[in-house]
Amino acid sequence: MPRIGYFGPEGTFTEQATRSFCTDAGPIPPDSALVPLETIGTALDAVRAGEVEAACVPVENSVEGSVAATLDALVSGEPLVAVAETVLPIRFTVLVRPGTTAADVRTVATHPHAAAQVRNWLSEHLPGATVLPASSTAAAAVGVGRGEFDAAVAAPPAAERYPLDVLASNIADVRDAVTRFLLVRRPGTLPERTGADRTALAAVTADRIGALSEVLTELAAHGINMTRIESRPTRNRLGEYRFFVDFEGHVADARVGATLAALRRRCTEVRFLGSFPRADKVPNTVLPTNADTDFAAAAKWLEDVRAGHSA
Ligand SMILES: O=C(O)C(=O)Cc1ccccc1
Image 1: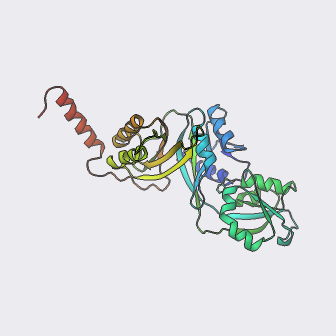
Image 2: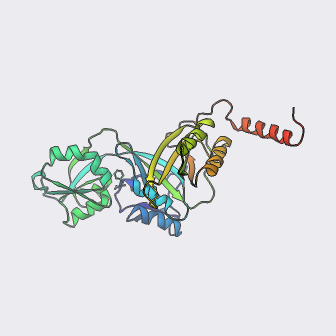
Image 3: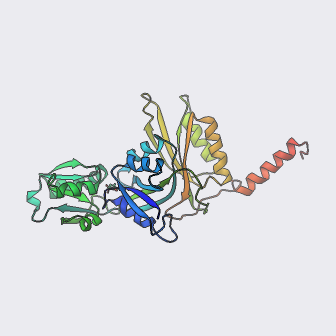
């Protein structure tokens, strides 16, 4: 039975996302043992150490943006690759100990990404409460059970997992917020190309004029649609950044392979973070002259030229 880690404890949004991967056709066998791990860093380190086969972590939210802890942990140890993604609608619930009313709530704990999405609701409905950070929404619920906080903003499954009452449900400042989660493994066999794929990488550019623009130009020149770019400090020195870039296509696509090779030449560091099917299954755009057959024909022509058969 495969062991699959996730950013826990039990009852997090990430557990919900992990369970959505557990289907017969999905990337996790339904009989897998799901292992809650305390932080995003420990979840990814457990994959590196081989304690779990894979782990699920949140990567970006439609309201609050990237999950910095995930980006940093992906590049700060032995290489890992994402093999699947899922996008989950986020609905928040306020949990309290039985008998607590809104007037009793002095402290509300939650994950900072959740806090950022319910700030207005909290100031309107629990105006006197101080918002405290917790390592996850479910950890906040655990803290409420222990009497450390009066309320937790958590995922609906936490209301079933912990013996707490629901003070309010479906709260959010922005309707229809979603979070994207990645399933991450040690490098090995890559997921097969589906034609509706995403590739992720992290690159540190050289410190010279136009270095980032060269990265973007390589993508554009190969007809590749970028779906996200994010920067994080490398932590080596002030002003040095690592760019996290997601784009359409699979590393098995000739245009993606050529782009990666070009970035490897141009950047001081490139880490491949995976090619996997897009959650929305939207087929990748292949512009004229950028299909595998175009690359194969050009390579054949070059081979002929080099062999002295040029026409
Ligand atoms: O804390 C959780 O439950 C998580 O899985 C992280 C998170 C927090 C807020 C929105 C989406 C995911």
